[in-house]
View 1: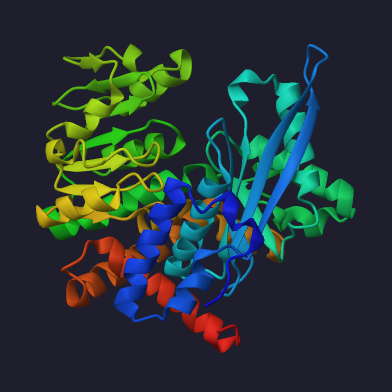
View 2: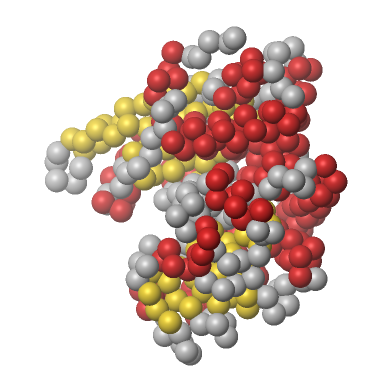
Length: 431
């Protein structure tokens, strides 16, 4: 049996990590993988912990901890976002990096999995403090990231501006501005990014809902949708689904949700969210407003998109979830136990590693565009994303129906993804 790395104690007891391992073990059982291979796959190849010391605007010095998990590089450089949140833990970062390995493998792109985070409330920082924190974090990781080694991107509470600071810090260290373009993705367009990256994750979730709706309902036209979480992913998911004929009846953020069974004016909801910071200030039409955003998950809709945080559909509320199609915009929003209940009831869950892969797929397009000298337009990038994700959906759905229909669709996705990683590891002589 392969022994655990010495840093395993930092993450092994984390519930998010344990959920990721449980999913891995179930897929490995279907594939017939031996325990020693599972042991290799459940641990990251490297876990970096860094200390970040900044001076606050009040003159006081404060220390923050950050991490970067590099899970598996069998298919290529590590790839995954960096999040800023007061709840970030090493276990969460490792679990997310594992999910990124499967997501990138399933998408068919030449990346392994990585993920990073800083335990901080970014809303409590000034813009100057946020910049200092970001630059020092990336400087601390400079020996571990590289356009050919590990390529971070935004995640929760990070954005293109922070990627620009990362890029600039890396240029200062390496002195190679054109080479460094590809060290992060989802950069502003003026420093090598693609504007399409901003919409890509939500666009991809909407694509998956569109293709799944064709299978289940014959199409999106007239189907009702509720979107839990109205950040970047939820906003663009709702926007594109509404444009493609669905009726988006409810959206939520951390302050609550708004619901109108006749449909919401999504452009107006976005405007209200941007101006006031809360969707609950939307008042157009016969709208119901609630301060409990979790209630949205139980509304009588055809399609539910959990696009906020993990573990929102659980055994506590699964019996009240009414949607026939659930498309996971967030990472890990459905617990394994709740997913089995939904599957037994006939609901279809398009899993996160398939549904929200639009961001990382567009990041690959941006990275490749950087390496070629930026020769692709945003429209060309979106068209390529549409082709890749649509093909991937039908490949997974068809495989699920043919071989694994007794399990939720996630298992088919995991089996395909993990099998590709294991085959690459065998070809490289790792196992």
